[in-house]
Length: 280
Picture 1 (cartoon, rainbow, N blue to C red):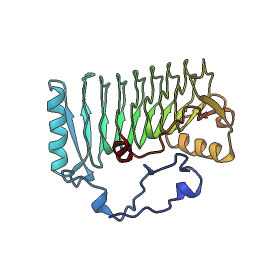
Picture 2 (picture 1 turned 30 degrees about the vertical axis):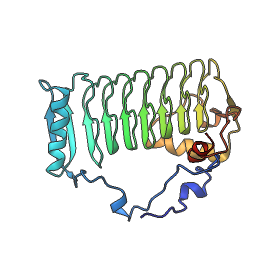
Picture 3 (picture 1 turned 60 degrees about the vertical axis):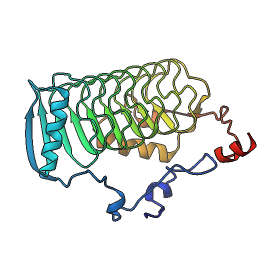
Picture 4 (picture 1 turned 135 degrees about the horizontal axis):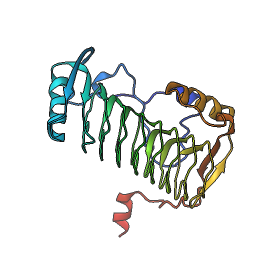
């Protein structure tokens, strides 16, 4: 089994565990490959490329064709004419460079763990929901529930997004180059959200942990979401992270606002589930 190791990010103070009890954080060494792959994942070569013309294909046919190409070892796939179809690019559980030359519909690129996805158009509701690792970059706008319940990776929208961005976020980083709607960060549990523009009402409502950065104006803070203190580490982190994707904030990262949990909703039982059963 892989052993927990102290990573550079931890040494910088980016992974301080605040919640008490059994930790949910896991860090593995890249050398322990047997712990980083799925039994049905494929070895692919990113120097081998292929194209799919999805003009007359159903979402199921598109996804099957992507898997068939991965089985052949192809690691760079371009999908032309996705035509805003729903549920495309989902369930990819290994490394892959995947590009869509047009927009996707609802639930695009959900349940992924590892691929680097580039979408040249827009996306509908719930893009990259339950994402575990990898990157998803959208050049246009995105619908509501963007990045719902993601656990890892970078999810980037260079335009505006709808309401409930990052609802139930459990890790990873969500970056929005423009504005976000109401209830963004609702019940956020971990991770980081970077909003370069304005944020709608009830930002961070009922958040338990995690950090939200906003470069514009916040219409209204949600329950138990409070301003935090920006540090040199925050500024350094924001500068380097946004530079990766060529995104800039209107006033610069030094002027961004930081929001964290006020911890007023931290009400936890002192007993483990099995101990409760004994008492009941």
